[in-house]
Image (cartoon, rainbow, N blue to C red; front, side, top):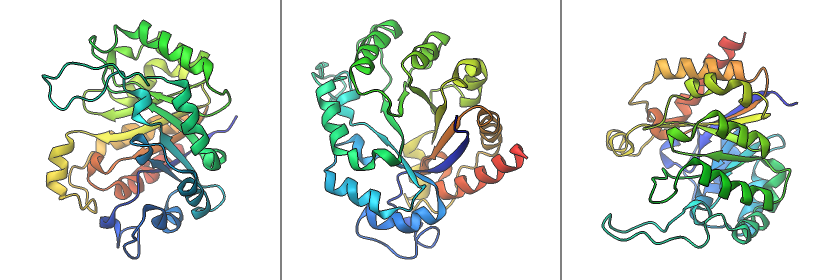
Length: 285
């Protein structure tokens, strides 16, 4: 079983990282990847959440990074949204006919095929599901289970539920049974990832891998403070980083962990990654 960890950022296409990560601005996200890959070992592809990519651009990603570099990605939201997004809160809910569509997912899988050998996690990110969208955890697991049983086996699937009350032992046993990993989200309105891991460690450690996404708190507030330049830590979280580093150091005795850091976590993902790497290594010694 593979053990250890990789750490990188949630997306990488930020002109504000020039001077911090990059030597000069680039026109396209793929053009940043060669320099990015000199500093980090993995990257989360966020843009596919909004659309199925074309195979040509996927192939460019694969060609832009060295051997050993890997990616995680989110599947398109058209597959994970139970209902279409509303323009106004007063608008009625409209069911999404492509929710957990095997056909749509197979189209996505075909598009990203050139990158599959370098993919550490194919993530299904679900929004908070209130009872008007999903009756509860049993119904969610029933629908998701049928979907996971119908798609190709053997790929690194990982699931991110954003309902704190879904994080039960039944949920983690469900993932283990379907050979999928859990995505730990350190974000507003979710329990701290180290507490979730401590509670369910016995099951998580048997999954073989885990994804940890550090997403932060109030997005609008930190965007206002940084001006979206993302080159400086403006909301330091030293205690959280120490707890997360300790969690990772324990995890990697049993499994492979992939850590993705968002700029919204502290204000500058590269700075957070630097601190976490130092803390993980010192904790693991």
